[in-house]
Image 1 (cartoon, rainbow, N blue to C red):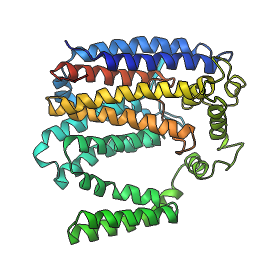
Image 2 (tube, helix red, strand yellow):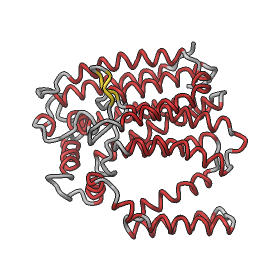
Image 3 (cartoon, one colour):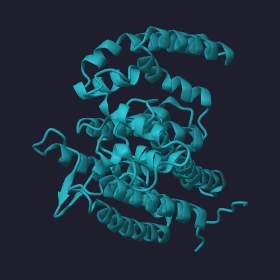
Length: 397
């Protein structure tokens, strides 16, 4: 069977870099053995990749809705636990995070749905049902609470719509309520959004019915923003406030972001060297082995280290998009687009988060952040991509 070594090597290098960064982040602390655990999960993850490389992707096509029912049940069981944060299930000595596995399941489910409805992609029923499929896992996940993973579902959905062939205008119109709600947090952002909305609607010569309906929906959703704000968790409100004003609560909610920016900025061009980061060594930076692993990279290896990691992500995404565009199977192509969307979104948001360019969301950096569930899921995605590639995809160098 064919095997894409570009995807494998880039993913492996990212995972190994992640283990070294985790080691340096927790060295001398009570978690200093965490890198060994991450290494063990990497071995398991590569084994999962090999298995999924050998399993025909058409089997996942046929089993997609069964996977869907199973993950809904598991996510529901997670919420039955007696804890404030309900994200993990204990399987003996191992804790798994079902919300991570739900990302892959939803890629397969949405891929199956669009593959079944290629002749009616622009139908409101087809698009509406795709959104309805997303809603149960979305609400179950944000009740854990895990808003970051919930965001991933919708980003993945819109990318897969585009990959399946839905018109960009239709995707934008579907995005309108979300954009209206996000921009309504500030009147300047709302004004810019509304001007852009009017320009696009006029430029694309939408029908009067579509024009009026879209405007009404945008205004109505924008007016609900205060209600949404009132029902956010306190920590979610703090993260948004820190994003809008980094100096907000510098010794509380804003502490992580300030220390992250100091760590990355102090690394300079070449960094301070392995195990020589002040912010990390003196434990100024919380969650440095997970959500803020990029700050560890920036402080110890500087701009050069960050560039190398980002370049590896570029290679990985380039090969995935090549597979998506050249796959001879509609299901395989749409699934590949979904995988590219999840990796791209999580990389972009995590790095932007550590730089203060996006709110802190708790989204891990693929392959680098500590976490066995996340690592296994991303390598499972690589295994599925390898099987799609082996089904006759021809990629020019």
